[in-house]
Image (cartoon, rainbow, N blue to C red; front, side, top):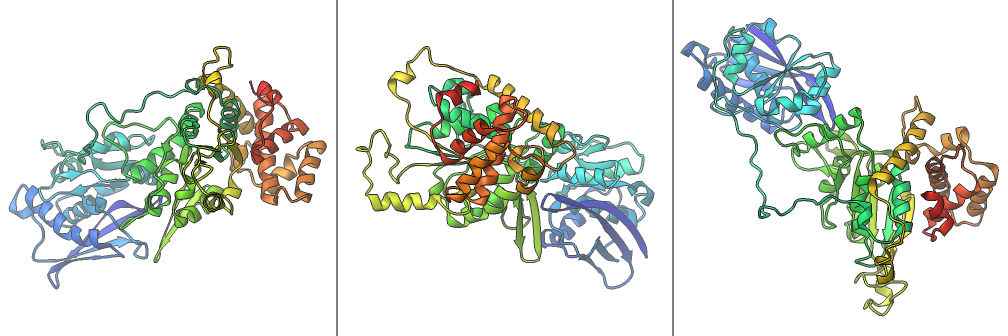
Length: 530
């Protein structure tokens, strides 16, 4: 009996596991048997790999061992395996077990790629997180489809060999001259939009007239990583505000960029030639989106949803009361913990989901009700009440900042002397506030005020005594819950960081309370913000 071992990676959520693909070619009942908890795509790999080896064999002696028993074990055997990316490791293992490849050449090497019947190496989703997992386990060489070599090379210290075919891989392992092969086209992506449509114009806070109250709320949210709720009639500018939130967020760090790019790779969003994602992502699903689309899931391999694709960025849920109840309930965990765990049968997958969530809602079903113009609304009071009732409960209690957005008047829109600020200026203030937080929380597992555990915040970074009394009074009269008190404390620290104050006092706590309870901000609040 001849045995050889090649390595590949199994992805369970965003976590990669090193898999030994052990191939034994022996006498016995002729056939090919895949064991080790494979899914349907791996059972189909038997036929794909067999034909790929036969069609790329240079001589008849190099074809599939059709008169032997071929046993393929994916170890560890208790871990579920899925995906077509195991094809290359299986094929190389078979060639090594048949003596066509030196077994020693497979050492400390990971093989990733799907094989076509002709032996071409096709791209697969999730290459970057697989290579990251391989590097974490001491692997320093990886074979991937040629079109994904740049993606794999994002991992520092990794020797990446991009190949077009199985024949090229075998030649490289044997130290022979690599033969020519036709380029393999990646997945075909077409758009239904005509040329020139769908491009996003550069956005800037300076584009928006007025709304100084809401703009400052955006700045506080960006500085501390706080979740935000925007209420107001349609056309008031809620979507415009949310779309500009990423423009005031700092660039991602190298570690964050790798995390986000790996998640986009898992979701199949990376295109040929795409590099690291350096800017915070933005994802805005329609209110009719499924639970799998927003939080993750799907058939076959569990894939990350919108809240994970927006990791370290912004998830915008417009028309929030119209989202399905199962989607809303599923947001509880990621809003609190910054990660989402999806369980399906015996399989459980966890994805990071540390995104800033922005919710937007109209004051009524028709969207025309306004504090200043009530006659435009055609909704009956029971309908308005039923609509607004959806904005209570455990989800909205996890939102830090509440703002009411009213349409900008014609006079304010044409006021040439009104204060204006662009995104670059606000982003510089956000960066300074985040730098203060990074220094304060150095050596901790969190970076921003919005995620600091409440007990730790109260114990190690308490408010000034007068500021704490304000919160205690609100807690006693029932206008704040315990969770609300914690969120105001976090907001107070973010306001202090933006102001350059070493410790929040009554002024910072009072402003944090107004941000939390949707009370209007005073002119003094806005003057100190600038």
